[in-house]
Image (cartoon, rainbow over all chains, first blue to last red; front, side, top):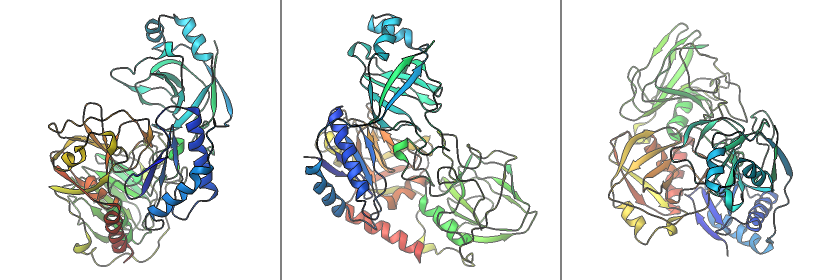
Length: 211
Length: 299
């Protein structure tokens, strides 16, 4: 059963599971879609991330108990299956400042690290932290690398990083503690575009090495 | 036009922000003290959510090339009476100084600020470097235009003292058990409520760090989730971070409690060195407290 808990008086956090799992993200996105088809007055746009959906609302327009009842009505209709997102190819120049660190820790050497990182599809589990930042998973176990002890004050837009078994894309320049392995020229966030972020949860990303 | 002679410590253009765009990684933003900002706009003759200036620590000096109605609400600011509107003549200089008591004050101009909206809002998005007119806080030499969206007459009387919120601690701030309260050992929430939390100097529009060295809260790990304004996160080293208006849309630290919306203005005005006591309450009390403030605004 989903766990539904208040996040203040103006939001409910729905936890659909406790692991990084394609099929749980699929359920999160299915709940999100069901709520957007049948959005009660006062419900704001929910925020999907990994295994949860945060549902903010105006408590003067919508009673939390009514929203919870609606979510419980949707629960049995949602099937556990991987999300059906778009496929996006992200060209990457693998020359990041932490590529050597990842290569050394993994014992694979630089070219095998690139091969392993670019060799699979990644699911976008959340967009957050900073505008357009895409949390993707999961890298091969051999590539898992802990976050940098002190984060960098500034990471350039387009940087591709690894943190634990997650890989992510910095869409705008921001502070950051992920191990930077490369960089893409692709614009992943533009405030004048609609939608402003190119990727969304459920999309599948493949990194393509470019010279 | 308004010319910025001196920008103050951290002055930004804010309206009601960009709620609804969190899924693109965009912070909802908006004023940290939403109540004072709404009052400043109302007494200036604007809609509650018109674009105004949020000033932190020290307010700016501005020259007006045209006559304007200005209204200040929030922290007390040197050089101008608060919670009231007044008329400035063309060519006037508004010289504002330090803010105290309180930390943030709001300067509304009748008609609002004529700043170009980006993604539906005139608020600065700090991490994205867009909005707010310049994609950054104000600097000396910036020029702002005055908008023409006057909603009603400006107030001839000051905002009633009975309808203002405290500007000085010690602060009692109400909070609801957080969505991850269950990730902490039994009794953690009670101990949190029994402990005085010290406000550190690490404060910005995204959040504020609170210290309680004796508390030593520890939780099991959680997956990254969406987070709300007012969320009190616990870092792995046991430090507390209360999220403010321009918080990141997602977070990976467990949220032990959430400050209620009606008491966010108190967090907004707390200064480094102040102490905060969290008092746990239920959703119903929180909604009642919110309704009370909204009723004050809607008169």
